[in-house]
Image 1: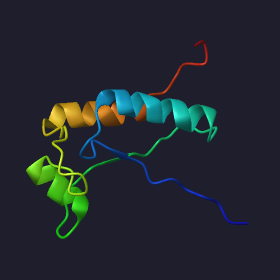
Image 2 (image 1 turned 45 degrees about the vertical axis):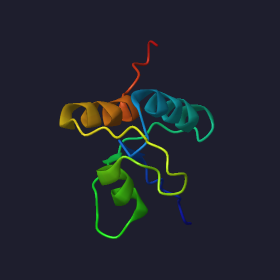
Image 3 (image 1 turned 30 degrees about the vertical axis):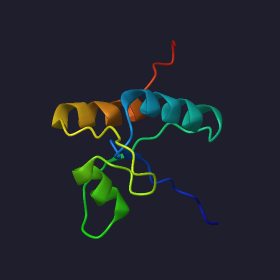
Image 4 (image 1 turned 90 degrees about the vertical axis):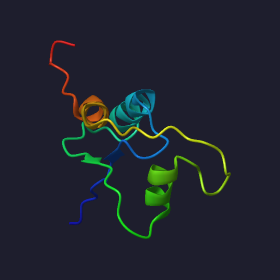
Length: 89
């Protein structure tokens, strides 16, 4: 048997907390899973995502985008997705 695993990223350039709430809802309702591992975006050389992170501009549209750079707020985006619901909710 082979199993799929999902690679989810929080705090990607252009993402806000409301996007993480939508991701949480999607993974719960559509994928039927509760993510336990989510990567906080880390800029890496030679990627469009890193370009977006540093310039705060979407390279495909030229429009300004929101980029979360506060470490605690980036962590909060991750917490939203991995937040566990109690069995009583």
